[in-house]
Length: 104
Image (cartoon, rainbow, N blue to C red; front, side, top):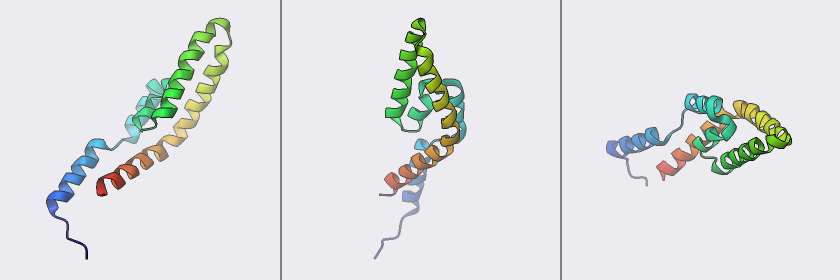
């Protein structure tokens, strides 16, 4: 038998969700202005790929002095463009995982 939830518990859960949920608009703004460094991925909880993107960007910028860095920058641009299509799904998955964590 399930115990009825109290309104206060629902309010606290909703406040926790609102405080930690992610916005698609904010993710797109980060993607547009700081996306080459993977900041939008870190915002959506994908720290490993965000840091990998940041490292690839940094190394590629250093290697542009000997012209090989442009290959890495090309990879970053393609990754950045693909992420434009993936941001809504990444945001939804982040918020769904948050709901699962709060509802336990």
